[in-house]
Amino acid sequence: MNGKIVLITGTSTGMGLETALGAANAGWRVVATMRDVAKADRLRKAAESAGVGELIEVRPLDVTDPASVAECVNGVVADHGALHALINNAGSGHVGTLETDGVDVARRVMEVNFFGVLNATAAALPHLRATGGRVLTVSSVGGVIGQPFNEAYCAAKFAVEGYMEALAPVAATVGVGVIIVEPAAVASEFVANVGIPADQKELTDRMGPYAPAAQAYLTRTAGAFANAQSAADAAAAVVAALTAERPALRVQTSDAARAFVAPKLADADGSAVFALTSPWVA
Image 1 (cartoon, rainbow, N blue to C red):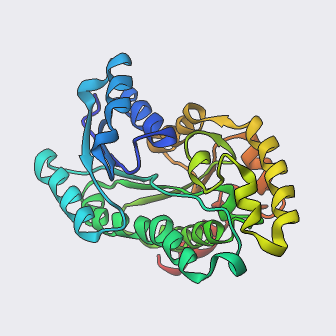
Image 2 (cartoon, rainbow, N blue to C red):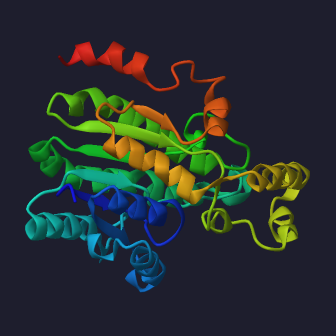
């Protein structure tokens, strides 16, 4: 054990679950949070099987509820005396388009994927300043390149990327590291929760004039996820950034993710942007 405490949001399945296991295997004491702790059995069983059950505790946290976030973060610090890292993993996807969805759908997606990240980060920052800790936020390659029929989700992830990129040099002046993690396709339950029904005709039917484009998108996406990175491999990249001595601002979790963002991000690891803006606050 390294004696350090990390709080991770959205740990009931997928990358969040695997990140909790990976951090515990690296010696961290993990506070694994989820909105519904009734879904914690899978994590607990996996932790016991991996021999790290004593290093993982489960607590309720709804990132969209500032009171829930404050209660959880303050409780962790009260019980453990410190907080050394926050991993913003909780999120939800959505497939649709503006004309048929309306604006309220975009607001709901932003509430979880963007404002949820801000709620958790704001609550954690005073404690991370005290420990010289880190904030790691799981974004997406969709936070770099806008993807058809993922308008609301990509908008939220673009917002996360911009916010964290802007926060990084400011947080660095008080000793807090900020890292953005960008997975590409990951094989996890997240895919099943983005709003694609088992009967894809249900989705294309509600797309109206966009149905042919939606069908083309679904066909392409099925191929992309056939070669998806495993949740464990993606989580390993998160844990590597958590434990690295000098992690980059921006971390892609796979060669596929790096190749996907490369056309837009010549500064793939964020070092040039960070070097540009850090002197503004030095």
